[in-house]
Structure formats: C-alpha cells, structure tokens
Image 1: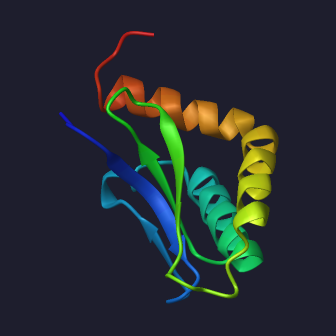
Image 2: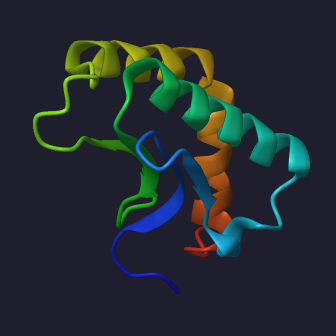
Length: 109
C-alpha cells in the first residue's frame, strides 16, 4: 500500500503549525490529541521542525530539522527531549507503530 517513508504528523516552530496526515484521521481523538500535544510541546521547547515518520519497515522515527543558523534551535536539548518522549510515550509510540504495520502494511501480528 505504501512505499518508502510515510509522514504521520509533525509540528513546525517557524510557522507555528501542526500537521496530521489525512490518512490517519480515523485514529481515536485521544490519540490524535496526545500526538498533537507531544509534537507542539517539543517544538515549543527546542524549536525547529519535528516530524514523526514511518520508515519502509514500519518503524516510527523522529525526524528533526532546523533552519540553517537558527539561534533558537537547541540541538542537544532536541536529542534529550526525543529520548524523554520515547521513554514517556513508549506505549503510545508502540501502539502507533503496530497500527501502521497491521492496517497499512498488512502484516500479521
């Protein structure tokens, strides 16, 4: 169904916007709200652009970009914040990964 990377959601501190891939609109509201809060708080804390992306194998990855020479972007804080989110939101992230593998990649669990 999908080849390559698929964006789940993301937040942009420069444009102050949040994006949810329309293919994932059927997720429960509570899950969508938790993802939005997680992404928006991340970019509010460290700046830049955070994107949650499924790779070719269905693994959910954090991708971070920042504008060149952005004095507000905290690269070290970014890495620490991602590790914190992976620890604190482990259950949510694993569930989203499982959801994608089953419903989008057609894998048996």
